[in-house]
Length: 471
Image (tube, one colour):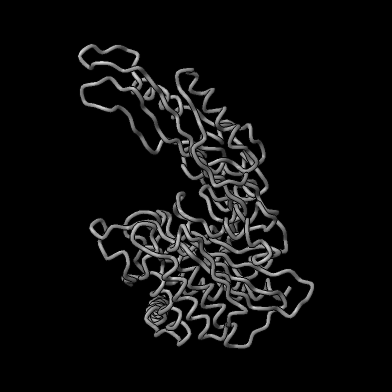
């Protein structure tokens, strides 16, 4: 018994030592080159306020030419009104004359980051304790670097896929007021980006909080992001003689009604698959509720349980939330105007006008106006959940993450894939990269990416693209 115990301890020590050695192993030459590219992307500020996507596109253009691409393969694009928001498309021709291409899509712009708010410089790639830190490390310059690196290696290696591969790097995904390159390409250069399907952000997976993947996800469809303005107007008057008829109070009452309004529960093929598969892998009350809601969408007890998780609550319906406020014009005057921005994430298949009417009815106050202020344009549509997309992804997940399930998921956020879907190019977010449950600081402070996820995801996505391109 003692000998067995000692043997078990020794085996555990050897295993641990092997893990440490693997974690500390030097990078392969190809990984080192990739890391250098990733670093360059992160350290090139592409935020709307202080950065330039065009500057980064210039650098990528130079790298692609060093790899062997020429003017015949690379298309640069921008518009005069937005000179800093340019992008590029690069094409690696395939051998087949009949198979349609595959489009790799990546936005290179990032959310604004202020140095004084961050623990580290947001525009420096810093590696600490198993994480890469920096703005864009997670959203989405890791995938951008993977796509660029992949296209460069394929060219240098002389790799000729059956399907033509296209890479579009665009700006404007993170800022509604910016020039959106993906939208512009879809509307103005449809033939340039024509493809059987696109691979984009939105997939990935989830970690156990200790750097290990426990779930892989493939992104199949998303909500549409739409903004509305609700506003109250009033003649106003002197603040020394207040009355109950007050624009700010009317707005406050309306916002309370928006807060309390619950859009009806909805399911589609993607969310049914998500809840069924993810729920089957759990043994707790949440897992049971996930399975139950698929079997019976009218199960109020299951819905109540799912609603305690904000991501599941959002996945089950359209959601709307107040995000900006303004009102009044002087400290000593009754307000003549008060308004708020309502940001809605609309379930696929539901129109922006239908949601506007629902908000109007929920507020039920003729003194308030509810107007569409801006949206991303197209109606959200879920792409088909086909074996041709799922099977290769399952094969690669089994290879790189044995025992980890691959689960279809509908994004509750928004990506540029919605513009491709609108012109007939289905867009999917593949597995490979994964993050922690807290979101890894995406759009917030101290954004980070798991180092192991980035390197393993690079290998998985390379093999996955080759597999798709060979069929």
